[in-house]
Image (tube, rainbow, N blue to C red; front, top):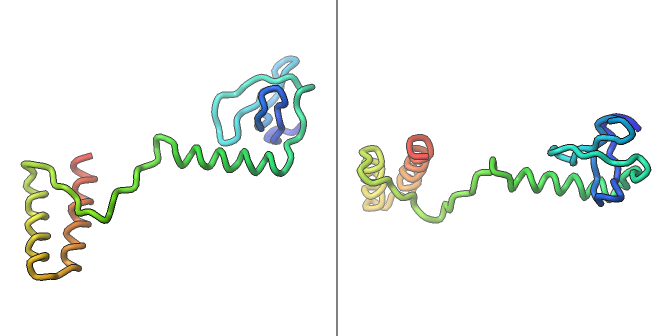
Length: 123
């Protein structure tokens, strides 16, 4: 078995990446990373193409849902300013002035600047 080969552990019921031998056992790591586990070589077989695809999709989905994934803000609503922040107040004033003039492009610009300010200065 080559290092990096994807195998199906029939006992655990998952596809793992072969990392090496550990005495009478082999070490496997989940596709996409994670904690390694030991398996008996007799319980392993090469992963089928369908199992490989399923494991790859599962790993991609877990990466997308992981803690590092940022939630998508609701862009249909204007951003809310932080109370008592001078920069937020100035950007809201710009937005209100643009709304009064029916300048939708300037309204959007003010919203973008306010979102950037909120993201950088008020995490």
